[in-house]
Length: 627
Image (cartoon, rainbow, N blue to C red):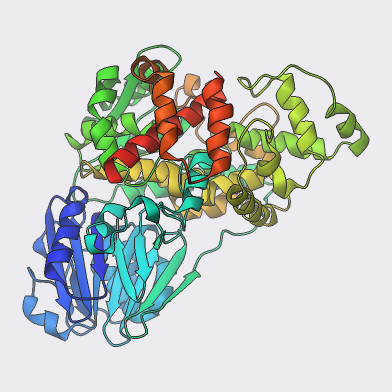
């Protein structure tokens, strides 16, 4: 786990400053490599092969194996490939064994060398062999190309700048901003479409970033930069399989149990201490349950955050799990002072606007974990695999409405009811659902609460295109299409995974998520929709898979978000006049959004508009730091 940097010209001072900008990602070492048309840099967090042999940039040729400036440096001159790599290839031992049978010899115990040998044998197709999280760049000396790749679900970040033949890449946007001569972070260079999408979604979706000419490489994609022509080729190397449900519950249960065991076991491969985040929910509890079968309880550290107020606090459920498994548990109550103290860290970590305030406690739990371990497992991805969100349940219910005669739906859509935006089970929401059922399924996000929320042109185009793709992958089931939409587009890659990556890597902590194993993605496409969510329950099959693993109270509890009572804290310190000032920052970016805030958000008090206020506040503090 590391941070990577590079560009297509030689400049030792610049590549060194880029490394320094993301040093928090790799506190254990750094390295650079320069050629006439190339600069590569890496900062290292040592997880696999802690020796100097694992240092990067790493160089490779089949006849000599791996080398670097700290290990067999005399062989560097004879290299065919060099690499800077951020992430982990969990199945590197199995791939290494396959390569050894084909005549490859290894000089290190690192997964980095396995990537290089795999590229030597299989070329760009090597990524199909990998089970892991990664963002890497391989310099192919003979072809004079940079082969860049990001893992299937976009767990690890990859930013790049491309303009007038200049190509720059980094694990974080702040690395690219070290090229101050390009004047990237100027107000006039802010991407207006990205601003639209941020205020609509709370984050900026790939391939967009907040700045013009800077992009995110999307998950499941490879990018080739030709050092001679200075042009790129980008393509998708992995597609989620089409929905192909298996109507054999017993078989699905067995496969799910075996897959969970395998995914956790792979992610416990490490040369350093491994712990786990524990929220008391289904996902993290099941991960800890599997972990305790693979290590002694006295060595299994778990970490959690509590909040004051029953509405926010999951501590009673956390205690049930940690007591059952007798883990070495570390618990911290997140307070208003912590929110204040973390404000500067939040601004620094999220170098493009990020609207999820649960990033604050995520920083704290990461800091807590790093005092005891270097790797922590999490339950991220369980909701997207097994159907855990209320929107997935809404999709299932919508599928039922679509089957009703159109005349019934038309009448129900006109029934007068009192507006209620605070409860998703209100009659108002039901009437809105009947309205939506009169439109095509791919317009679901466009039409949902269309009179109460902002729906910009960029958002409409993006969501319609993506949901249509997901409907094709789900046999036109809206419930499953929304789940797939979350899995590959919405809640993970540019949202929750960004939150966790930046918060954890700020403290040099690696977070691994068993449910993000690509085999779980493919498994999810075998589970019938009604075994994911139905009219009354979510995660139907998952609850049965883990029935004997976790306390009964965990199985039957509802979903609870991970966030502090920010509403109370924020409005204690910030007046309505403050928000009027924040609104001035976005003047000129998008009139529709500006007017929506002025006429609705800042004049109304409800939970839905509170989310928009948070986005405005977090945009303002980003702007203060980076513009």
